[in-house]
Image 1: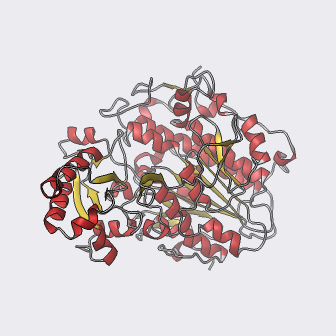
Image 2: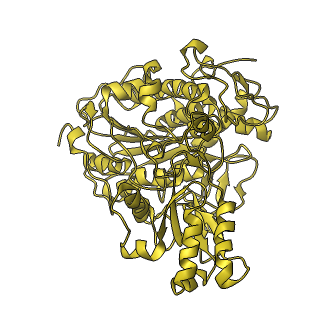
Image 3: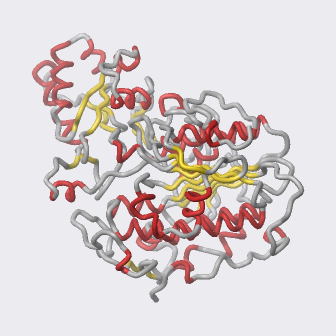
Length: 549
């Protein structure tokens, strides 16, 4: 059948005392102590979406924009505009050079393999699906500084409770840090997963919730536009779009499927408003079942809304799908805020909304407009660099990996290059002249702080660089040159770096602020509201938006 997600009723009541509604009215409180900190990260939410699509928003996003402190000149100051780095920056108040999460994955010189940012073979994973413990583990052990939630646990009185949810493990884990009371991400097989850092047994509340409201409720449904097609800004059939298997480039988009083990159904469900709305429901049910914000301490809720990123990669920022995702996310966040009002209290929580990165336009669309655009190919870079070394070193394999904005050489190769200026310059020239590459930076120069040029692009590389984890040669990309997918991110170009930063709630002075800020300012600012000092923040406290210091 065809349906829009919001034709479904708001979550069914799950049996058990944990989910009992105490009152149908918003509680009245004698005082207004801060009791809950909420961080919402909308994956791939470009800052300009607010002006491009925001006139249609009437619920949660509109409430945050109109009644919160909106920073109109917010941008990441670094190169690593990817999910793991962005969530870690928001959660810690530090840049990748400090917190160490330089990319979603990077080449590990010790193990000589590509490692995911949260991969941890020593920490098993709990499955809320058919099996109790599955495959390789995940944790925050590669995060080099504590998160805001970690600091809340150590610096605040009382039993601080932490809950984080996302489709992606790197989002849920980095938002939480080293421990959480409830943490979930979605596995490839459709099972919800959690790290053993949460505990060695599934959380009973989550078992009940996931059993009562399985994602299979959406089997056979169809994603249709939230409103009339005349209200959508761009064409619904744009050049360069790459929809999931068996989806057309135009609406409607059937989820299909017969069982939760249907891989195509799982991918379509994730790439739709259903998944964001489900994460919003998990947040509400965690507030209720864990009594977040309803005790004599301050609790923490983090939600990484992932679907916009999956849709943006497939359809690009100028698409009906992206516009519709935001329309429906506005509804989801609105319902979440309404439940926070009811369960926690209107003046007892604070919300920060941001994104982990932006996104590029679709290169084919830029080419059609007469602009230089294309795709950077790691294989091409490898072949060019190795070819440049053959006259000096002979034929061979010299590059271990091209990833995380860098070229990683095999053991001993870069040491040879540093004492052979002719070979080094040949390798640099081959990289610098590869299609889509803008500039090249040498590892030893970055370590020594001797980066040529004090411009924003050079500073972006420095802020992303870690001497142990980053490549031997770092490079930046030309505008509108991306890697893979219809649209992507991960560059120092402004469309990847500019994101919303909005604060709302207790202690926040509403208004429009035009000062330059970064998402790294979020954690220090929330910390100030709680009297918490962060370990190694690169961000600053946004005093201008604090209403009662």
